[in-house]
Amino acid sequence: MRVADAIVRGLEAQGLSRVYCVPGESYLALLDALHDSNRVQTIVCRHEAGAGFMAVAEAKITGKPQCFMVSRGPGASNGSIAIHVAQQDATPLIVLIGQVSRAERGRGAFQEVDYTQFLGSMAKAVWEVSEPEKIGELMVRAFHLAQSGVPGPVVLVLPEDVLSLSYDRPLPQPFPSAHTATSLKDAERLGQMLSRANRPLVIAGGLFRGARGARILKQFAETHQVPVAAAWKNQDVFDNSSPLYAGHLGFGTPPMLRETLERADLVIAAGTRLGDVASVNYTFPQAPEPKQPLVHIYPDAWPIGRVFHTELGIVADPVDLLEMVPAPTAISHLRKGWIGEISAFISHFMTFKSPEPKDGVDFGSVIMAIAESAPRDAVIITDSGNISTWVHRHWKMTPSNLLLGTIGGAMGFGVPGGVVCGLVQKDRMGIVFVGDGGILMTGQELATAMQHGAKPKIVLSDNGSYGTIRQHQEKHFPQRVLGTRLENPDFSLWAKSFGAHVVTIQLGDDVRSKVREALGHDGASVLHVKSSLEAISAFATIRTS
Image (cartoon, rainbow, N blue to C red; front, side, top):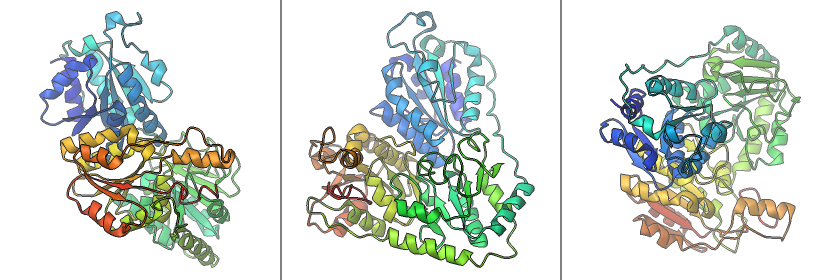
């Protein structure tokens, strides 16, 4: 078989059901090899960023490495946004990039790029396959590395001539994943620290996603009576209606929430790298010396103690570790007051109250209507920008939901993520929240949804502005607007041109009935909301920015 055939066999051995791509002449032999695969479906996208986002979205859903393919030069440049997202979001990803032939390397050939330099700071590894006999080994190593330690992207660069060469070696089997050992001694020490704390708090990250993780987190919180704050884009790991829910830490976290949580006398960061967003720009916990004793639990040592002084750093699976913590013999009588204080704040904070704007529909009212009508197990996909603030503040998610978004903040993830939900989670409703900025970055992937029968519900906030940047602009340079106004097309006509069902909401319309129509359609639908610019986020208006 050819090297290209060996690559496809390697993808099949790893259990991949699909790969995403925009075709390119630099990897035609690989496309030809995929033609003969009955196990790996090739999803052809409309832009390399869309293909990359789709692979990232599927990796987030499955927790396993997924793959996208791009051609050299422009294709790789367009797809690099997904590589950056995978690195920022600790998402396992395999990227296959076509390359000029080996005879042309180093001559500045057409679309030639040195990907070690280009992508080396973003990827866990960049390997150029110049020796055909090594492709089998490199495939299994790439998948193993992508999901080991802190997960992330691995890039394989494929010179055009190598793909057509013969490969006559046995294909290595996938390498088993290495697992960190969980120490009972560490669990007991954490239990002792908890027993001495009056106001403990857990910051829970994405490693609790899934049935077992959510169950163990809930069991730990209730057994030890510890409030749980969800790290950025991970509020689906804990029931937001629980009296132990302590809110969502991320962009837009209001000072009042941070000040409430800062009263903790023990912080347990579990399943999160505790980056700048999850730590509210390194203010909670405070870097480099937290105001409270900090326990950090993560299955890789790299982020532990890197930024914050850590009283107890535990390299372990956080789910296994929390399950082993001994039940308390007694709980501080002050704990009940601490829980009540947080619960009262969160209950008030999550209550929706419209500023009743006059320049368009309050997008928050649309979010509330969708949360009321959506299935209990809806998949919630957020693009970047202020549009997600209402979702995070007011939608009371549970582990029955699945929340997908980019921790790294890249715009354009929403629609591709919705497409993937329709391919991978066919029995669940995927609801995409996207702004008029993000929709024109990758919204053309609606064509991919229609081609493959995906049925995303796309909720579009159309307020004629790059809203997040406008809000910052008003804060730092009030009434000096430049670069944030948008002249938009008629998005209703735009969406109809793809064959999607379209529902438009304008000021004065019955929001609930329009929402029910959009969600009730058996197919892809776009809910086009002519939203207010004045009510710019769930935390502020233009006037109060």
